[in-house]
Image (cartoon, rainbow, N blue to C red; front, side, top):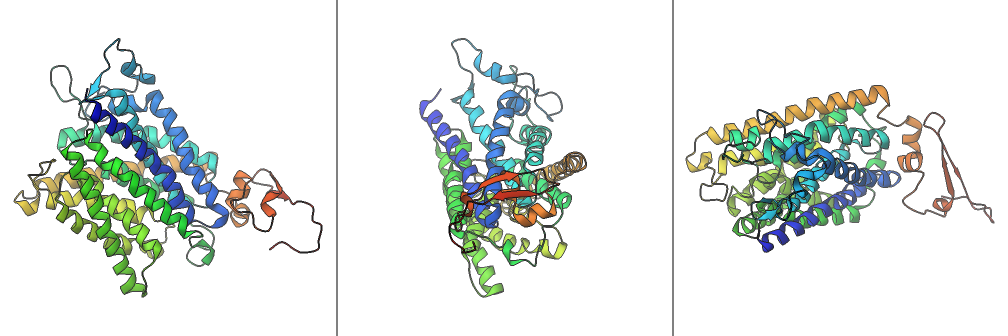
Length: 451
């Protein structure tokens, strides 16, 4: 065990955990004022449900002994983390760090992947239905896909027992372009189709972001945490971490410029929302490639992601699906760009040692990357659609039209984010969704009407 490596991974895990509250600010600021608490609660709900399931069986299903074909780890092999802790005086290691530290690091990846999906269904999803979806989706989609991509275990004889994409096929995904971003983006698209459009989609100006400082703060926290996300995936305080770190700086910087350029040419002005979204697009794209390409290529990838994602987010209006906070346009599209770009620009002298088309490697690596990207996308979309459809037909996934008009914060959580003229100080009495909600306003001593 190396104490420096262990310390770096533990700090990185904390950084990645911070990304989910950062995402809550990012998404919360992009919603309407009467939906910000619900949006943030969906992220915190993901932390709670995924954290519990990860300890119970999620880690085992993702990194336990392969159950066959590189498709799933045995969920019972390390049930409740017993196989990690009940080892006498010697703690098992993953590389040079204790396995229990690796458990924590991978847990926060699972958490933020689920939280990312929530941005696609802002302002219209029942919180209870979302929690059920999060629990089922992470179990049947994320845990298996994490095994496919991230598990490189070997048995006592040195035989490969890891996942079929990363270890078996040789797909390069250093920190989760497939397992996190494509996975979440495909599920987000499925839920968009299940829940349908918000009232006034594309017409109601109230759907614009209500708090841009929240968005900028969230983007900053995400970027800060992303250094743990990418550089922490080296699982050590070493040169590979440094390589990933500098690429995690370079790509989003270029992506911001690309996004702002599109805005300036298309709309006549560059926006703070564009800067924040561009940074996230660049971070998404560099995630799988941060150990495979040079910093110069990282800037090229970031510029490409910023331009393409800026144009992609507008497709929802043309194609008619309501991806509320652009999860599809940024995470699905950005994840695909970053994953495929490895097949073009992977440098054989990089830590990943892949050989892309531009370095004389032919189309072999590009083909592998395409298989990885589209296998995860298809698997996640189909399963997410099926889960969402069943939830919608049983417990119902969408709030009522009346509650959507009134605001999801009050109708679902009996809370309001802002005290506007004293109204938020009243006591809320939420009723069931069929009968609506009621707010008992505090007694007034004057005749003025609240705004």
